[in-house]
Image (cartoon, rainbow over the protein chains, first blue to last red):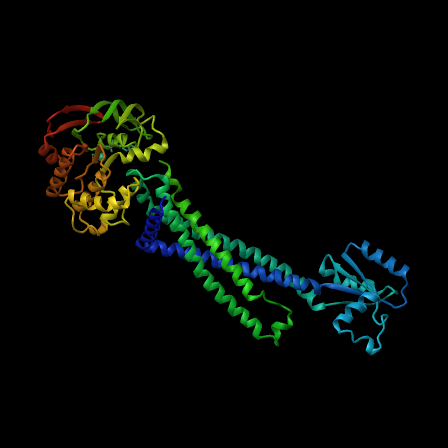
Length: 299
Length: 225
Ligand SMILES: Nc1ncnc2c1ncn2[C@@H]1O[C@H](COP(=O)(O)OP(=O)(O)OP(=O)(O)O)[C@@H](O)[C@H]1O
Ligand SMILES: [Mg+2]
């Protein structure tokens, strides 16, 4: 196909789109709604997982040892913790390691304060298999004579055990509902397109146009529709996300901050949404248009 | 140009549209196919443009064997014949000019030639105005003229018309049939399926008569009985 020919076919696609205005707008709207649904759902999931990884650090339990604990006691305790089925990971932090870590935090000022390497106790950092069993585990190890203190971030555990199932269920249900909605919308638009384009495809075949010549303008049209739908849904989704982001950033001193919730960074997220939308939108448009004329192309 | 050998067509629903038809239409001829509604005229046209295949028998058109033709050869075959229908079948999203232009584009003729040819074709069919109008802005007669310009755009050896005047008033019909006569005089073989007696009797050309799928009469300078 020559360049002139290509330009003519692209022009033909644009003409078709403006001549079939109602259908074009319906199709763009379908892509828009579908991507908006996917986008909002995706951003919701993204922020959940973003918070979940931040939360992970808060879900450690620290077991501090009495200063007198000797190496045999420590080894025995290490073994007990490792054998405990409620615990999935165990990490030992010696007095020296704890001291080094704190030194970094305080810019080496420790020694001038007269605090030696034995200032901090040795500890175990453990991760639980099931967050709901935290009270039980904490109570149990508190009984040990060689253990001086067991600490954990109670709010985080409460939040996680109360909401994680809830969030999982909601996002599952929401996903199913939204996907169904999107599929219904798309198939309905395709049915409309097939109906209105059937005649054209038959005529083109009668006058001897090849399959490729019939297909290409439809496919370009589908791609353009997907592209425009993607742009509009990016604008709307981006607008919503910026609003929510600002609410988060401007409320640093009140309740929202205290929940420990964070929001995924603005620029990276918007870029990801933009690229994702364009790719998805164009694919949606291409596949949709091919699907709409597929049946009529068998001579 | 067209050869049918013992052609029988039975549709999937069991209706027998053509029964043992044998006929030949030589190059350059003008022929009518007439008969009452349901006699098989449109089915005959569909056999010739390979929209349907016969259940039994053989069909040759422009040297192509309708059974032997490959799938990828069908577009080229269709471009070697011109077709005209009762409902015009113009592309609704294209202007009169663009409809004719499209038929030329698909054969890969260069742009400069297309620019010269389209006005010329539209002039032949008597449509020099309203070439930028869309089909729904044209009268039936005007639409059929556009369809005719499109059908002859690639200089086909054969032009087939199924009820070309079916949607037109008598005066417009005469204009169209005279145009078909003119196209025939320019060397194109023309086959017209119709039940419009006035156009048949006006032309005094070959008349092939079908009745209930059978060929019942074939006169060289015939008229509508
Ligand atoms: N696609 C089809 N499927 C089943 N039967 C068909 C089909 N097309 C035509 N027929 C039947 O074949 C017979 C001949 O139909 P055809 O359309 O060829 O007649 P015709 O002479 O063109 O009629 P008309 O003058 O009304 O256009 C009719 O009985 C019709 O019902
Ligand atoms: Mg008919």
